[in-house]
Structure formats: structure tokens, C-alpha cells
Amino acid sequence: MVLGDSLSAGYGMPIEKGWVNLLQQTLREQNSSYTLINKSISGDTTAGGLARIDAALEQYKPDIVMLELGANDGLRGMPPRLIKKNLRELVRRIRLTGARVLLLSMRIPANYGKRYTDMFYRNYPDLADEMNLAIVPFILQDIALVKEMMQQDLLHPSEKAQPIIADKVWLHLEPLLAAEPDLP
Image 1 (cartoon, rainbow, N blue to C red):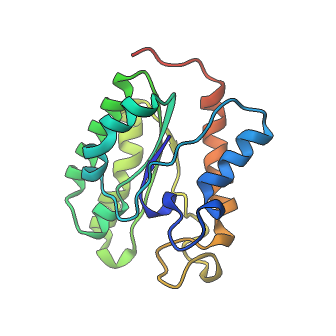
Image 2: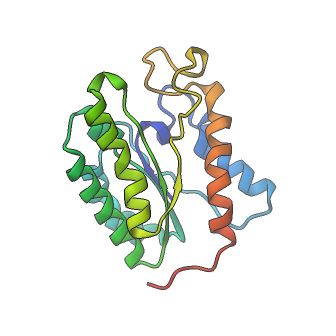
């Protein structure tokens, strides 16, 4: 299951062109029995994720949750400590079900100031270390600053970027698929 925001919801393009759908195609090509469920909502925040995670976990009973939230919190200037607290609670709730977590790290534009952007970004590797999480480095690395890889708003990746994102996520998801499940 993917719990994310517009970056995972395929904002600005047909959903079948988004990285989540492309990742599902990779799973099919690998003859995997896993099916991806995309519970991503454009504009979602960590608080929004908290409000809906329990119902999604109950309904779908995922083995793995790819957690891609926090960017909208950062764009709204939310305190980095609050973002990390919410992410930590999302991970805790996911793990209570026995599901594993793949944390997708985010960055925000530099115009928010070096101190804030550094604090925001550090949430992800710090939380991964603290909670022993598998982590995907910033999924828009080598994409965000390439104009043709981004939509006109310069915040959302274009269709051209989606296969690159899917490949980045796959590199970190594949080992989790082969690993033994965690105990609740």
C-alpha cells in the first residue's frame, strides 16, 4: 500500500502513467503476488495520513506500506518536530499490524531557508535510524531541477520522470518483498 500525497497520486497526469502504477507493472513482470493499493491523496499531510491510516490498514491489511508524506506539511511551514512526530506515529500504527514500512524521504524548495529545509529533510534519515526503517532517498533527486522532468508548477514530476521514480522506489522495495515479515 502507498500512503502519500500528489507525488504518489499521479497529480497532473493519467493515473496509469504515475510511478505507483509503473511499480505495479514491475511487480507483474517479476511474477510477484503482491498488488499495490494506492491510498495517496493530492494535498495530503502527515495529519491527514494519521486521520485515515487506521481505516486503510483495517480494510487492506497490507504487508508493506510505502509512506510518502510530509512535503505538504513542509510547504505549509509546519514545525519539523511535528512532522516527525506524525511520521513516527504513522510508522507505529503501521507496525502494530505487522506491516513493514518503506519511508520515502522528501525535500522542500530552498526558498524556505537553509535552516528549515535542513531540519525538514533530516526528519527522514533520523526517523529511519531511530525506528530501523528502510528508506528511499529523495525520490525527486536528479529530477526536481531538470525542467523537462517537472510539470509547469515545478513541484510535481512530469510523466517523463515517473519511470525514474518507480525504478528508485523499486531498488528499495524489492529487498523488503524478499524479507521475512515482521511480527506485530
